[in-house]
Amino acid sequence: MIRDTSAQDRLVEVKPNRKRRLMLIGAGVAAVAVLAFVLPQASRLFSADASVSASRLAFAAVERGLFVRDIAAEGKVVAAVSPTLYATSGGAVTLKVHAGDAVKKGQVLATIVSPELTNKLAQEQSAADAMEVDYLRAQIDARKKRGELQKAYDNAQIDQQGAERDLARYQKAFSQGAVPSMNVDKAKDELQKSKITTLHAKADLGTDSDSLNFDIKSKKLAHDRQVLLVEDLKRQVDDLNVKSPVDGQVGQLFIAERATVAKDAQLLSVIDLSALEVEMKVPESFARDLGIGMGGEITGNGNTWKGLVSAISPEVVNGEVAARLRFEGDTPKQLRQNQRLSVRILLDKRDNVLTVQRGSFVDESGGAYAYIVRDGIAEKHPIRVGASSIDKVEILDGLKEGDRIVISGTDSFKNAARVAISR
Image (cartoon, rainbow, N blue to C red; front, side, top):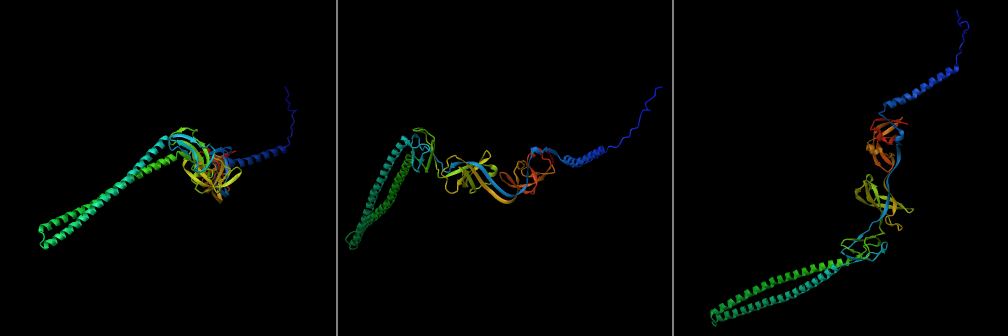
């Protein structure tokens, strides 16, 4: 029989380990603290409709203060008056100036040789001279004819007076028995005939006089019409000398020297350097707030000048509207055509206005709502926005000073009411 080792076994007393107990207690307290922190966060996460990383978003706080609406853009110097001169008639052109030459108003810049136009002027001038002769002859003929009619009328009156005297003599002689009654009757007939002749002569004098006046007037009108035609041709011939309409500088030459051009062909342009303006492109969203006479600043060449909006195009091109500013006061002398300058137009300036940094949330929501961020959760709230500037937008309702909102990236929220923002 084999003996076991029970006789060799000995009971060992295990002493309690305080350090291990403290470690276990500390671990339990830490676990409880973590659960206390995580459980509310987890409950908020579970209550959200979606979760988006903060790195994909941009945030801004609502502030109250000065609100300035302005437009800043790059503009270019253009001439307020920059006429382009055209050929008024076809022909060979001789240029009298070169590009960049200073010119005065009325100075001849180019001449056009047009034999057809000059010949036509000579022909029409000759026709006008012939019509003037006809008009003068008609006046002489009318005076001659009027004299003949007047003579006939005067003779008729003399004949009538003679007939009246004859009748009186015959009547007196008949009363004394010196002549028969038939002589008296004959004298009465002669008087009646002379009266009729006088009436007709008087009527002819009036009627033919009117006819003569009409004939003279007709020839005068024809001559006047021809004179107007000649004057117009003279103007066209004079326009063959192309003159500068303003004081300024020759801009671009569109033709070569001694070139033959057609009617209405471009010849050259003249720039009026005394009336320069600055042209700029304004986004369509700001154009509706622009108005003629608004003040602005023009910066360039180390200088700043005051300007006024002088023109706004009624047409939108590629989402932009062209506007022009004229210099307030004298035009700077050192500027050149097409030179680039910086332009700033002040639209509005107000104090104590609730604003937030402008972001894509305005376009994405149409300014109808915004996401307010609290404790890592972005909640959708209705808002009402007002005017907007380049970097700020006015808040009229729905937000208060200090609110922190998501200004860009809300397109990833999918229109959710609550979105958890993860780090």
